Figure 1 (cartoon, one colour):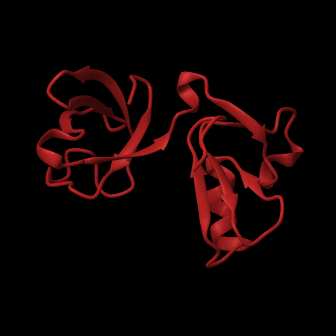
Figure 2 (tube, rainbow, N blue to C red; figure 1 turned 180 degrees about the vertical axis):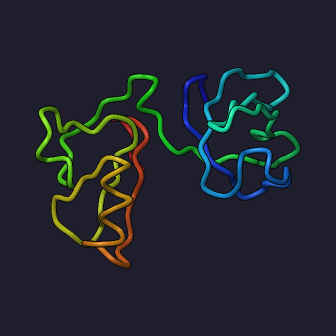
Amino acid sequence: MKPGIRVIRGPDWRLGNQDGGPGYLGTVVNIHPNNTVLVRWDIGTETICRAGKDGSFDLRLYDNAQIGVKQVICDGFCLDTADNSVYGFRWKCLKCEDRDNCTPCYMKTIDEVCTNHPFVRYTTPFSTV
């Protein structure tokens, strides 16, 4: 985890609505040596969250494009844009041939195109799964 990565609530979240509620995004602003991180939520609050401390994870990674990760071309809804490269996570459909999506297109795709299809998330261009 690095500063700049976007996050949402994770599986061990026990911090009430300090983040604004389920689905609200935040940005990691500082990494602490005790396996915690400081997150600045989009609503303006800040919270110290566990990122492995005591085996607990308060956060899930949402996007890493902000730290400069660039992957393949997006096959989703952003095909009409000037640069349809996948910045951040790449989501690959395991049922559809040659369907790679950026995170915003993945969110639309699972609702509109690949309903109930399994996807694999690649976090870097060199991820193996």
